[in-house]
Image 1 (cartoon, one colour):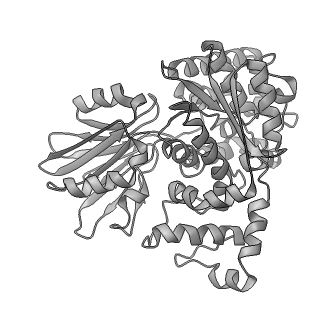
Image 2 (cartoon, rainbow, N blue to C red; image 1 turned 135 degrees about the vertical axis):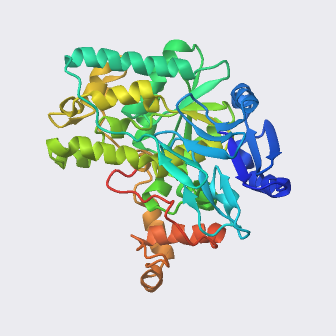
Length: 446
């Protein structure tokens, strides 16, 4: 994932250099800093993005766009410039005013902090030009298909396969493989196109994900890497994870800890990694959705999809870019995504089976126990469970929790675990006053 930083005035190369330095993990292969009459802007990138970045720069575009559907861009025009972000918010972008009153922007919050106390997120599907914020497009309900479910399943499989194929390059690739349905499907599709590719599974000793991932890897003949971690390793890496994640949301951090360590391991073998994110939101993968009235399910899925940018998609971005990798999310491809939005919800949640149509589309292509595996949240499947919560209970006293539970901005922390993460977060971002850009997990925690 490329890193972008800029200040809306001339003569700020040193400042932009410092901003890029704080997000240097996003690009080690190349860097450009340029000036116009009213802008100083820079971009860094990794080897996998070299050609696309160079092509964009020739057009005056500074773009974080690992795929054709992932985009956070700054378009430098003859008069001024504009920021824009993809419909889902796969690629991040933040902005604010520095102490001089200059407009600043960057790919991560840490590039803007500490000079800017009040930071805003450029929302998905929005563009910003000359103080005018425009909503271009957001995911919404589409007219449902009337085809037979078998026809829908075949078309869904075809589109996913095409998306995976389009993301593949000559650079060694792999997939984060939890052994759940989504990552297993993506891994299996990669195996249709590559003779050699890597899969990475992580968890504590005896974690369910390790067992299921091993079964999938054996089935699809991937070069499989199994990472077994301990509670101590999870605790030790928390500061680094929270610094990169830019969040203290407890459920998001739980998932990010093992995702971060899996990313670290993967970066020693590949520079591009695939992920199964976005599937649960498209195909009703969360257990609580079974209690939602059928006529409200579409609306609830749209709500989940619109919240992805500062939960699961933020986790994927940070856990890949922290280690210099580009992440591919085939389920977020508009050819897949928009088609999925047209699939009737009765085929997504059928007779109590979540993601029914997706399972139907890949019958015979995965081990049966994986094809029909119930949803396990990332931190649950990895065996993390309540371990970090229990650790926090032993570190934070009841008195301290009551004293610090209410934050200056009015937010109320949900647990001692979240307070532990907040205290770590404040070590890095103590000057931030506005936290409206930060998401907080709900029932569908990643």
